[in-house]
Image 1 (cartoon, rainbow, N blue to C red):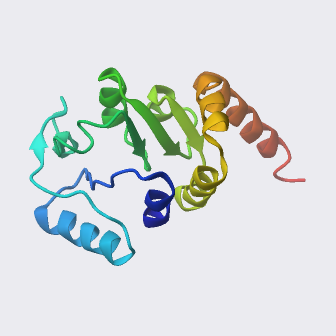
Image 2: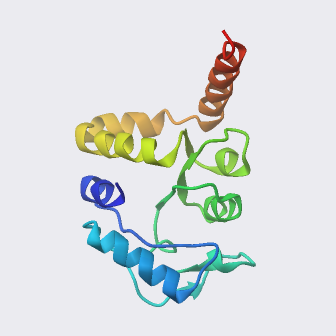
Length: 159
């Protein structure tokens, strides 16, 4: 799904892990390449102001990006990236998480369901439609609507 999304939007793909080892990064990069992704690799540096391994990224990758997709809950990194002035798109199941609250746009869903929908949108929306959606972004309202939808479903869960 990452490879398809990359082809649809032209973004760079960089692997950034909390439990980071060179072997794990290389294995995941290899899996992504095997799936058809063009993975941005190179020497990672401690560039983000974090005390853990997610501080490591590539200078020409995430560090230089204007927009970053955080496909799994990562409150620390999301908050730091937003603080650096980057637009952060987060995919998170929990609309109450720090990740969801700090992101520019939170997609409240499971990552394997969300990625194909994002890819389809990248392929089908016109530039004008994209500009309109970006101008209308209101993450607090989106999160409120997600919480309300979840509450309504819970009220009827045992029906």
